[in-house]
Amino acid sequence: MNSDTNHWSRPPWTGSGERGALTWLQALDRMSGARILCLGELHDRADIHLWQRDVIEGLLPFRSDIVVGLEMLPRSAQPALDDWTAGRLGFAAFLEAVDWGCAWGFDPALYAPIFDLARDRGLRLRAINVSRGLVRRVGREGWEAVPEAAREGLTPAAPASAAYRRRLFETTGGRRPDRAARGPEDPAFDGFVRAQQAWDRAFAEGLAEACRLPGAPLAVGLIGRGHLEGGLGVPEQLAALGEDGVQVALTADADEPAAPGLADLVFRLPRDGR
Image 1 (tube, rainbow, N blue to C red):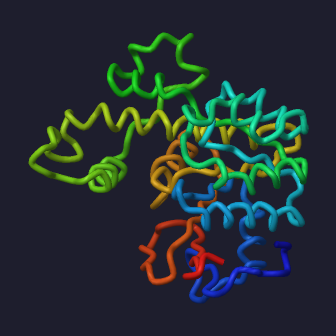
Image 2 (image 1 turned 90 degrees about the vertical axis):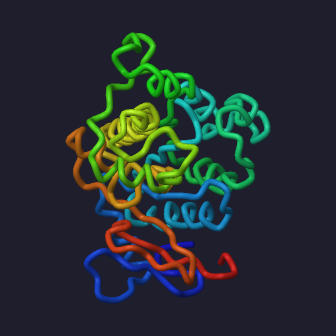
């Protein structure tokens, strides 16, 4: 799409603090003023990935200096990402180079429109994840047990807020008979929280690094929505890093109620996916 043509059917966008709906142009204008824009996803939803692609493309008339941060790939995949955008790798060779099946595992065809857009429009792609081994170790042993040389450049996460722990506990099943943790503040829940926060911190640091590149580009993060909802997770870690100008945009299905404070902007997906 371009900034004045909406090929998505209604209903359109809503924004925090807005009484009515926003057009695509109004939403793009608002998002273009961010330093960091997080576009949340459900990893297996093709319509959401097309929405992400359309937002990025729609922002180009406003901001040509876009860097796209990818949750899907660890930092070690950066050379292959650079080879992809430079046209030195075909898609199959790129997937092999980044070991997509192990690094991510979701159908790569879901993400192909985004990768194609980046290459066609000369956008920089940044791998903002870390290895699963590091996340598991932080969860099991805590940050203090991980030598600095094994932290993959990551710094410890800011302490988890009570709201973050509550949301994480409830969205992972809440209190149930087979669960060791009896509540969000139970120490038995600490390891899971540490692991999730390692991801939050990795994504936040990756996006902060991107927006601090020469020319202060707009950093657009493609991240699972569970790391973003309600301003918790990645937004909290970005605030702890001193980053302002952060916006979060999420989708909602046509008949899904959007909770107040869910995100700065919400786009209601049409029932037919387009």
